[in-house]
Length: 497
Image (tube, rainbow, N blue to C red):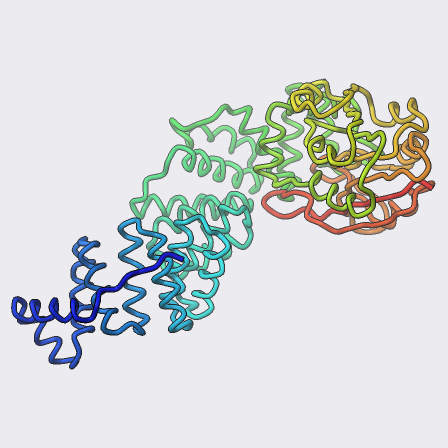
């Protein structure tokens, strides 16, 4: 922690004498309090308010040389240090203030602000929470916490914090602006449009991205209200110069509304889009999923077409937007059971996100995927000894007794009936081999096709279909975000008997 050198008391007393001689008001304040430190603090505040940060800092330091156990002056000093970009010194000053008095909400808020500037998110979050605990009406602390959680992609908590800030300080344009973005993520489209409108009314100009989001929110809400055609007809007028291509709006509306549970509106959009391209396997399957039609697996034509189209943007969306961390979580679990394998299979390898994580277990790694676009991305990672374009079950059936690890991160979600795949996997493995997999969790005992087009399975169903496998471990985890909310899943390690 950076040291702060306070002036000697003798130096400060010379300063006090000079100030008393030149500033009659200063002398009166000294007489009023019977001590020069409060007068120095008041003078420091005047310098601070007038933007003279260095002079204010020296004045507060002088006050502290006479009264080093005053937590309020240490907080003032921290604030002026921060205002002049001396954040390390600010951190020392505010921590000193809190050591003297840990129960002052203003001091915790100052620490939060300084830590936030230093990108110390853990310290900042703790300090914001302590501020709110000591003073629930601290609107700025609620907002600071909300913005920090927003950056950490903890969207539900961030939304609650920003809403609290808006309720306490309804004329803060920045709070309304943040609320608009968070409401959109939470699929509260009416709230999003209202918040952005209020931010603009409070003289916070909306940037093009916010204007586009506001136009989308108004359009999506009209669709939810049962007026899909009207929403699409009016979109260009609402969006004005910031309008996007109408086909993209319809595509994203289908995706967002299905993910957020507005299935009737999503189905109408899906029917409209399928009518435009009746041979499109992606549009056909995703409409079937929204309509809840019974299926045992996603069609291979859908998977291949969808992921060929999606491959270039796959990593950025999955990792940044959806916070997918499956390969790291699964290999961490796997390492608790075995440290090495002779020949590994990354089943449904996609863009090769698992290759780097699996390298620790051995050099022989085969990647299999049905999408040539995804395999092209995986090849760029240079982590596979072999990449094969094939459908999963067919490949497993053609490679008997070959692998001592099959790794399937986010692959089984495109199979409903897991029986054929698990039987084929057992045949492709050596005895004692491990099968590491992830599933999304379904309610009940079986499996279900979700509106997202992904299947969810219960653990009981997996156990019933395990056949030649023994389940060694099953750990509940957040698989990804869906409409800003965590998707519950399971990471599972099974052993081939």
